[in-house]
Image (cartoon, rainbow, N blue to C red; front, side, top):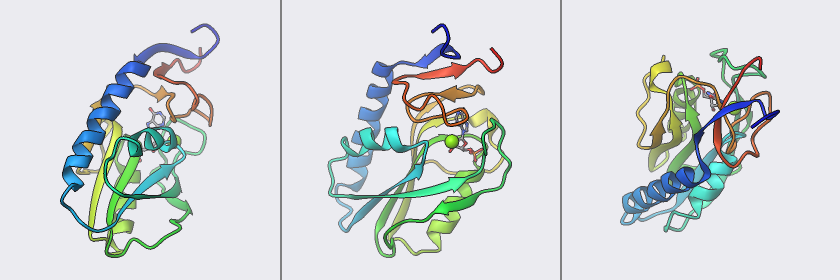
Length: 179
Ligand code: IMP
Ligand code: MG
């Protein structure tokens, strides 16, 4: 991994596939008798890779929509300030909503987005994240479908970025900040 800025692979491509398969099964089982429309909402940009794999493992009719919020700028520390940069295209009132995130860190982003979506009166609202950093939590959030807990390290790849880079790595690695 010389010159990539990634010091070690935390979750390999194969391991990611296993996690996504199992989340897909769990989510499918949950919605199987739900009835009604399902909108899978991805948080841009980090969730785009995970979401594209995940929806192909959900065996229930669904539509996808996206929400872009900004909280981090180009740094690795949350400013605690979440702004909506791009809103959903469609209404979610009376529909099942599954919110998909790449990583829940302090919980700030997720909790604010959850609050905002609840105000739109969905039939149900469930949340799914591939990665969870419990050690970093500042705001309590209930996660319905969680891929894996990871330690307090800044990770990149499989959609996750540092200063918008590394999103295309097929694995999730730990970034060696400063070298
Ligand atoms: P929170 O609001 O602190 O939970 O931060 C969640 C957001 O921060 C996620 O949507 C990610 O975009 C970003 N983030 C948190 N930790 C990491 C990381 O280790 N790598 C890349 N992005 C991260
Ligand atoms: Mg991000």
